[in-house]
Image (cartoon, rainbow, N blue to C red):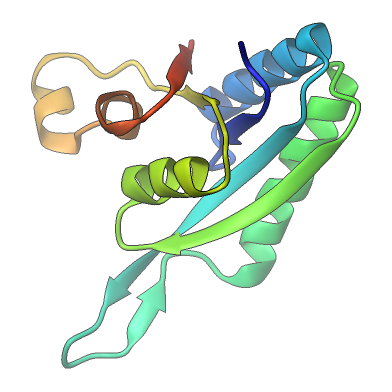
Length: 137
């Protein structure tokens, strides 16, 4: 049984689909919803660590996701910024450490060679997660 839902978002149209799905699930099951966004770290070793997005952009992504979730039935939405070199591992680790038992994520329409080159955060989450994962399309 689902008791806490974590929804990953990056502000893309695909992740908005996930937010709407997670909001409906949260509303239907009456369980808490948290939206998270990963600010991916680059650089390091001999160069300073630089994040892909600035704090204002992450805050905006999370605010927009929370607003969308509330508009789609969620009663309360928490927001979390994660910082990591790899989005999927950050999401799974946060979910496990904080007692989430359902992760919702979106996915693009990657097939064939583009899937091999680009990889898939959704696929990585599903493969690593300790809990139920819903990939919303």
